[in-house]
Length: 420
Image (cartoon, rainbow, N blue to C red):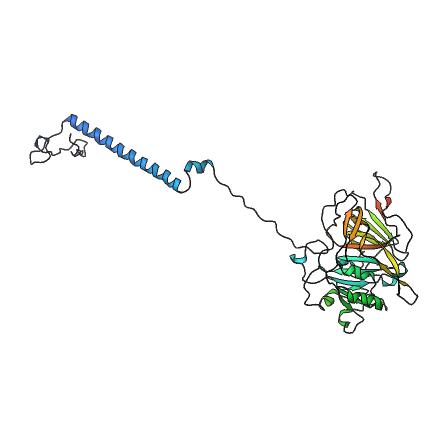
């Protein structure tokens, strides 16, 4: 049958319709219609079926090839994408937590207050007690003065206190303490002329309440008498330097993890007998994870009734000598401290005592602490007391005994020598 012969459609009852064709099977003409034989009908139907499947197969092939090509153009085959799916892992950077420079603890409200360190000179004669504000201070320094007494320098930065004192006069050791605090504000009640000259030459902002115009930063609470009745509050003192928004540089290195080699329960207490008036003991308080202060075994209570406490106690044995300046009418001579160089140190933290050496190269740089095994001594984040113990004062730490029974064992960390 010629290729251009039309197929024969079926009637609704399934029988083939007649198809017209030219006479003799020609391509044209007006001859009468011919009738397809049964064989021709079968051959035509078979050819039509094969053609239909060829068309459907070709269409399917075009679809498959088109899909593969589209996948390749999109970046890879469907099979490859199924076999090697890509995964993404979301990573979140750890938040940076602002920490107080002098305590290593998180800053209040997440921001270090934009203000300098504020140091207050606090008396420590028997009549000066009870003191105020010491547990709000970031750091407290205890220094030797005439007559084997001590005085305190309380340093505030991240926290303030509504009452601080009582305020007393400055001493020579204050220069070594203050010079490392990045130009601090120093509030005190006078001092002898040689000491005032030292302060004037030091990198500090001096606020002597005995100078004129300082009435706005002084408080005189009831129940006290002169010269033990003068106090201050930190907000008023900071208000005198409104343009100073620079916090101090850190003094210590902090870590919540004790230094390598620190022995548990090796620092349950420390005794520093400055004198009978200042016979200081610090005792580990497990429930508060801090050390509590006492004088001759009597708890050191503050004005608000709380006991003086510290997260860290640092005892630096320092060279001292008796200077030429008379500090009082009884002829008591100024005790001067050599603040640079090196000497023994014992750091108490977490119920542990770490002994080593302090080293300080200049007054404007803080001391560094190195353990006997050569590693740096870190402090636990929190407030710190620094005890400047004169050479010759036997600093004694208390440790738990080797067994679970018995009392604590005393260990001398600095050998007794003659006192200056």
